[in-house]
Length: 323
Image 1 (cartoon, one colour):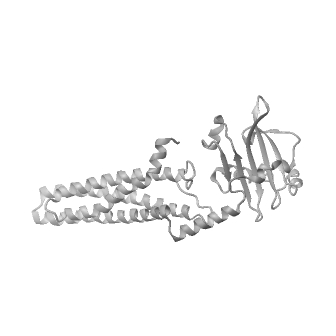
Image 2: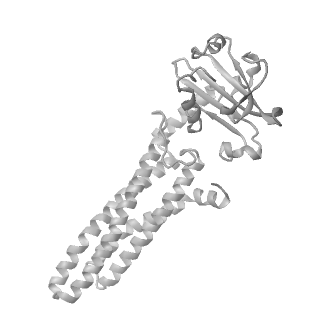
Image 3: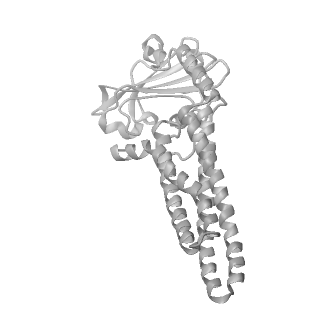
């Protein structure tokens, strides 16, 4: 789901946030004034409408934030919550707390809105059935709960806003994490391109000719394995540490291998024994872009959520040794 209007809606999340946040801050003052002011009924109506607009604005802010998180890849496409795969993912952890605080604010805001509505109803009933003195006492009693919840609402959204500001402008922790990530990226020779996978022809071929692979888009595929892992691969054993296999593919041409290159799939056994996957498709044909979520060029690496299917398949009994 994408488009210029949706992209604009997502990127305007910081603007949407300020509307409900300002109203939420004003709400307890409006409620407090209504208990002392001369025109109390008018202030109570104003408090009710402030709460309605703040609640509606909160919903808009949360939805726009979700799309913005997906747009900047902090939330996976189709996901609703960031996944933290390691302790170094400071922004993802912060976004988790940001979302929790925002949702807490919406829940508290809903109860605050309901309590204001009920308080207005009880206030109207008291005007008819009680004396002015008892009416003032009842008036203050029924408005204590919404006043309390309005302060809770400020707390939730204030904390949420603070985290949002840190994610946008940074602080000492996020700046250190960004510097460390940039340094690691500079040391990672395959940060932008899977260089070893592109050089698959230097590996040992497992088959003399391509064979059709239903598991990899029903394409014609050929497997290439490092010399250190070819013997283990042929007998169905897991690849040893440091070894990797590449599956090169070509698109189908009327039942035969065609000239149109397909994606490259790579599976590697890391030094610590973990298995890592990579997927590279430099030019995705328009008819195939549903496979990449609309991307016209795709490069995914573990621990990307987009490679979950690879991990599931290759950890199944009998498939662990396959690339």
